Image (cartoon, rainbow, N blue to C red):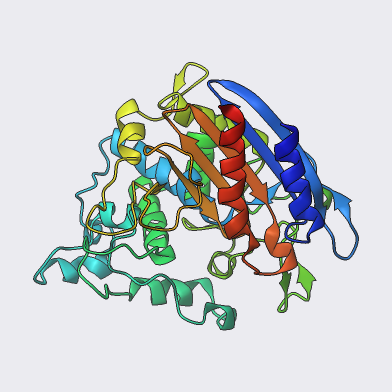
Length: 354
């Protein structure tokens, strides 16, 4: 694994990352779990460790929202075909309009027709949570559902609201009780309260006049008091390794079934063949015709997800390979070095397995 460590250390030395924690598992054996660099550089450097707590950003979509929806499907409380107006009255009027209504499957596959984000959100930090929710619940599709993939935070926020409606329970409480506790993910959750020495510090926030440490990086999630279906989750590599193991074992962790095998296998099926971007339920799938963070050597069945703060999960079922990369690259700002680092790192890792 020396070449892999050298690669990451070189990116740190180049100023592209403050630090990282990497886990590589192959055929049921963990080949590498190592921390590199620093969890914070400003105002004073402090080293990264294996138990550093990261803001997962959009990995929230597949580590919180997706398993919650799949579990509700397993229980018979949801189906992919359900129109979202069944759960959110504000959208019921759309069901009477010509064409396809927005369904659960559209939200999970980012094909709802809803736009990606609230325009100018960085300038709307004065909004209350209620005002933000009103904006989101007044969104209407820009094009017919099920015709185009547009990666949408708004869709995942609607799923968070649907999960709370169906369960009658706060989203963060539900995922902790039903997913993280059974998976022994003791350092995973929303609105963390750990010592400052445990956080991978993210970006400088003008409105706080400080670097964010244990405060969610995403602006919408911050307005939502740190809890949402699109961002807000914090975790560590050891915890995520448990989640990854459950996915690898088709829904089972230490003999306990968390999700059905049917749900796991369905989640990485290609539902968007009508678009150049391949999407499963929550997951991004490998597609040579669109940008793919997983590199060039992974198999056609590969899937995964990324987070804006510099996080990613990658699965290659054919090779039985799982890679967790957690970084806080936004500590240095929003330069896009991570877009080049991920595929190159994954290529390097796979080249060492042959």
